[in-house]
Length: 91
Image 1 (tube, rainbow, N blue to C red):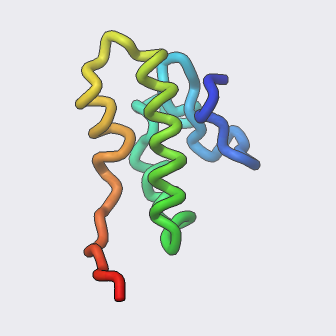
Image 2: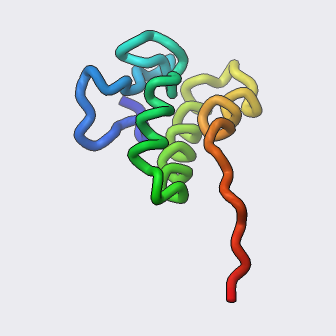
């Protein structure tokens, strides 16, 4: 598996990525599929920064595997869907 693709404790039914094509091992859609996105948002609901780091590492690996796909398309696919919260001013 490509570095950055492995999810700790993942099993076959958890919509894990299959590299080098970066498809979902459960449903066959482009990874992260809609089901995995939902699971990731729930898992990282209180720590979006860690979710962004995880998805960024997957994006970095995918850019090596999917060289024919435009980088902007990969950015949208891997991190563009993550909701952005309002920035807070530091006191």
